[in-house]
Image (cartoon, rainbow, N blue to C red; front, side, top):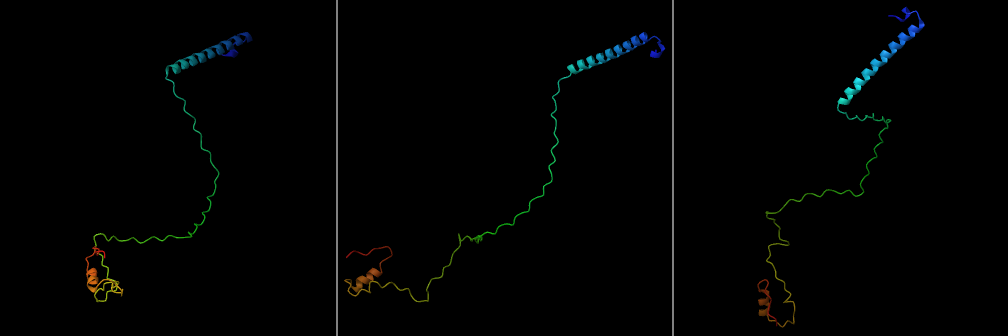
Length: 134
């Protein structure tokens, strides 16, 4: 039925009221059904909002400074080779083929109370043995 078919304005208003009431009743029924369905579902955790990172303005890189020169440069020391277990030859100093001379400090004293035999005996003492006191 169309509203214009009803000629009386009072009947037109009555028909309009019935249509609006039925529409709101249907909307309310759908809202109630949706609320019941949502109540049966387990609650979900709210997702945190992800913020977009701020775009920073472009800043040029600073120029690198020249490296300072060291005042006292340390030179690396050469690596010493190990001589453990190797024979080391040291040439004798002042060797000209002549026999080794013994010190003559005892014979340099002219007024010595020791006789020549005592001097020779002292010079020929083995190493580490002390002479007898006078």
